[in-house]
Length: 438
Image (tube, rainbow, N blue to C red; front, top):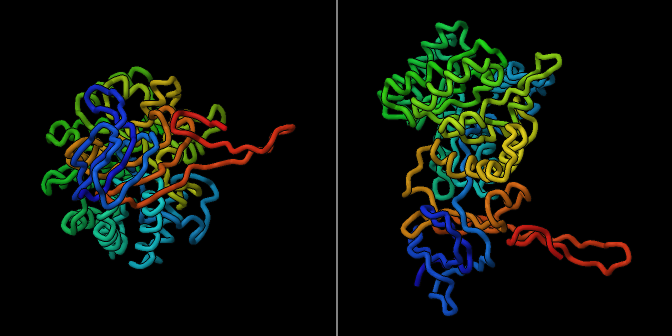
């Protein structure tokens, strides 16, 4: 007898792209079989009726700040809506951090993520705090949630590496304590020289400890902020390449076409990943502009065309930089399609990959950690949708979330009773076949 049988789901072949109906056999936390739908199914400890839903790998969150999540308005609201006031508000909140405070908020946010179908998360954690309270708390959270969510932690120097007293030592201590990724914030450093040195230091530290790099890079509407070229070049020359990610790069929305053309080549050649956070960038950027007002979105469409791996992240969930958020990557994809004008059918399908397989590549998830296939991990979601385009369009919630072979969340399909004039009341449901039907 196997642990779990998921009956009558649609599975996409990862090599051919073909979709077929199948039963998923799960045992010992792995998918041990993908077989045709059987009239006489095997015996299982638990049976889930898929009803034709799409079995797809889970969502992946490539960029969030769990240490600051759910602190919006504490100790005050960011009234200007700028990145800089957000940092100031957070600096006032940091002295109030306790282990219990960070753990409670982080775990609550991760429960939201799991309910929405996200089973892999990369979180930045501010290490410009000599006590490293938030870091130690999130290292504990990483262990506490591992049976459901794979959590990567980025040592993030929110107030700089070179320009913050003791910044280099704190980043090095974070590496010793066991983070997965080294961060940087070169555009926030006092001078360009400090910014370049901060990137070099982060890459050197990561290389020395066998870690990845994820830098907040050029998150500013300044067309002269050009640190992504430095990061990409250092990634290539160090050999880290795809183990490096540039997040935000909102200044790229202000670059002139000639420089942007050169930069696309540098980034593509380096092999680094890019993460855009469309919801938060739309909120924070352009705050110093009159009209026309820049919206601070990096050149997502052009980077994709250049062969660069680009993913979408949520970035903030109810914190000093963003007052909204439900930890739902599908909402991020929906906003991203509009913000980046990826609105052809194929492009909308691509935005779904930007919160699934492309985001998984940012985290470096291999075949043994991600995918729906025989022999693969039994961590997946069932979506009442035909494909990524349909999921983004209708914003469907997963009916089931399975983590390491165990059902960890269920959501009944929404049903609306419609009282149409001159007709009997009828139920309107959202079916797996792609739209509302009575």
